[in-house]
Length: 269
Image (cartoon, rainbow, N blue to C red; front, top):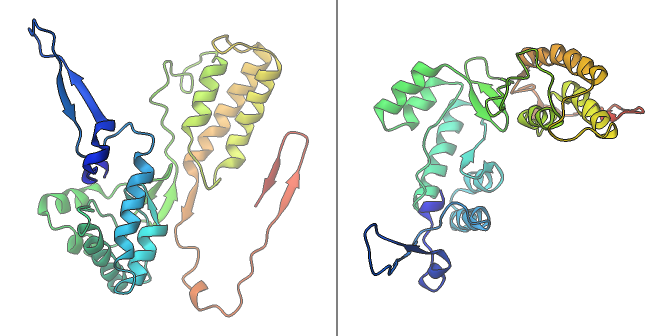
């Protein structure tokens, strides 16, 4: 997405690079300037979003629904949107593709709970074939969306751990416990009833004054082992994407909220 955004000439030199060629005895560097926006700039996401939305605004009279989706249903370059039926989904997706193409953004890699929608959106037959072979979950903001069952689930993977403290009988350090906790990305809080247990253990680890790379005490390690058994239940969580198709036509919709607080934490459902 970033490389599709050109930088005006007056600002290009903020992205200047010096390069020494091998064997250059004079040691004079070659000077390069990136004409497109690069990864690594802390302002790059903000600029990319601005360009995306500015381009979309040019179509707000022609495709108001698609413009709303682009501005409210994007997470960087990923679009997460839904429609009531196949015709509406196709029309919306094609409008979004047209709007993005006007700014040089080629949106692709579609996934849907209807294979017919994907087949009509993907112009590349190889991509379409791969999607048919998938039938597998697509990652969406920490969760995984299973298009076949149209439901959300969690697949906990801890690939960045230095040691496999989750599956092996190892006493973890404070650093490793935090890594496990932060690896479960759950912005909507669907599995917070499981992760709160590890958060409470981490609080106790801090109060015990344990250093980052120091193994847990026996009593805290026992609690960690108990939580690992509870963590297995996260894999069984299955949430229907569509709560009810009747909501859009309902005359009266009520939202009931339950809250509670205890010594170790508070919760809302």
